[in-house]
Image 1 (tube, one colour):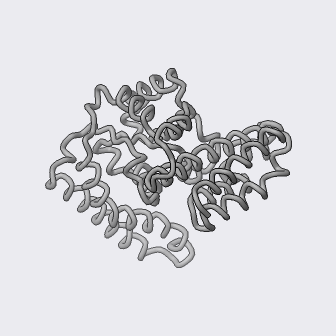
Image 2: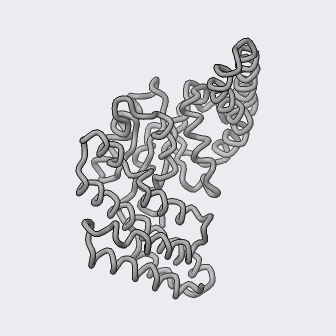
Image 3: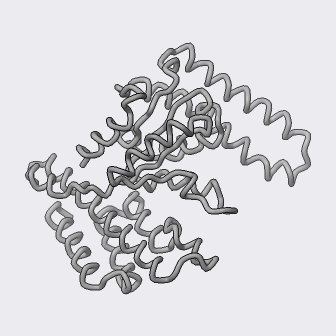
Length: 290
C-alpha cells in the first residue's frame, strides 16, 4: 500500500469517528483495528496498541469500571480519545516516510503537530522533589504527565502501571544513584528499551553526572551482577513452588544486568541538558517533535 492510500485509509477512520462519536466507538473498533493491520501489519506497535485499546488493556477506566469508579460513558470517551491520538500519530509516521521518499511536503507534516503530548515520569522516590517540579511545570503547559501518584489506585498492580511507560509519547527518566539501583525504576527502563527507537522517546534528566564515567558505569553493572548472584543463592534454599513464584524477581534482575551497560552507554552519549533547566528543555523538545 502506497503512502497516499495509507493516508486515505487513516482519513477515512477519522471521518468515521467524527460521524459516530464516542458513544458508538465500540461499533467501529473492529474497522479501526483492521485498517491498522492492513497499513502496518500484525506485528506493528501501532496495530498492537489499537488491539490493546479495543480489549481495554491500556484504558485506565477499564479497571475503575470494575469497581464502580467509572461509568461506561467515561470508558467509551477515553477509548475515543486514545484512538484519535493513535490515528494522528500514525498519520505523522506515514507522512515522515512519504517525506523521505519525496512524496509528502514538509509543510503538510507541520499541520499534523499536536499539543496533545503525553509523558511518563520515571523517578526514584528519593528524587520526588525534582519530579514534582517537572510535573508541575509540564502540566501547567498542558502536557499530560503520567506518574505513580496519579496513575495507580489502591491495590492496583504496580507492574501493570510500569508497563504503561510504552503507551506514552515520551518518558522522562530522572537518573540518580538510587534510580539505577532500583528494581522498579530499572524495570521501567527495560519496558521503554523494548521500543526499536527508544532513544528518540526518552529524556534523561541526569542528577548524578558520575554516570558519564566508564568506571562508574562498570560499578552499576557489577552491582546488578552481584544482586543476581545473591538472589540465585537465596532461591536455592526454597522449595519448588515458592522458588518458582519468587523467581520472577530473579528474572527481572537478570534482565537488568544484561541491559544496564547498553542503557548507560546510550544515555551517556546523549547531549543531556543541565538538570536545573531540564523542565524547560523537555517542553521545548516536545514542541518540535513530529
